[in-house]
Image (tube, rainbow over all chains, first blue to last red; front, side, top):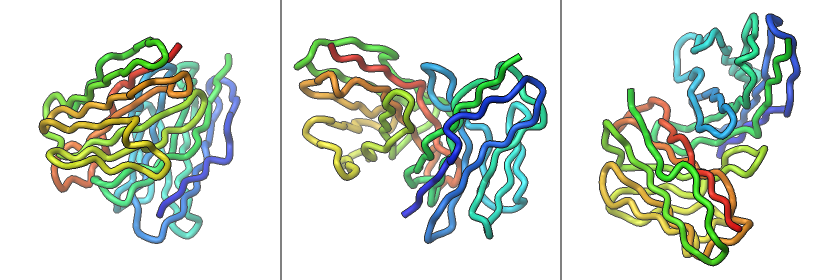
Length: 113
Length: 117
């Protein structure tokens, strides 16, 4: 079974500052890792994913994440945030494309001017 | 890219009534679809896995007689909340893998907000 931990329930940051949203996972098998963003009253939008290969993954909207197997982490980063990045961010793991996604509890990113 | 739609986007109903939510894959066939529930300010929790042509697989703690799932075709799965009560009010989201054998991510519908009065 897999599990995901997002320790930060909320991260406040000023516009144009860098941000890191933390994600740690546990699994007894190899996993695929994902970050999703959810805007208010909307569904989920994929930011990026790690399936294999390079541990640094670049996604949409300037986000990137680094897979660290030894630390079982997949932290999300952005060098300079915008007001429009204010949203809920979910880290998720899956044992495969046809397997269910297990989500973390989410981190609310609050970007202020 | 692959698109998943849900209908309705929002529904308000009286306690005791049944509500049907549709999930459609618009440009691909989905033999499997997943149904998630999200309570306010909480994460998504998988409710069940919908399989075309066979019975759905429910997660532990989810009442299969209350949340009826029908995967009638390769592009449509429905979730019926029977005898809905206020505690069933939630955001229901479906997802589907884009193609058979794919290791790619699932595609999510926009969600359905159910409010039971």
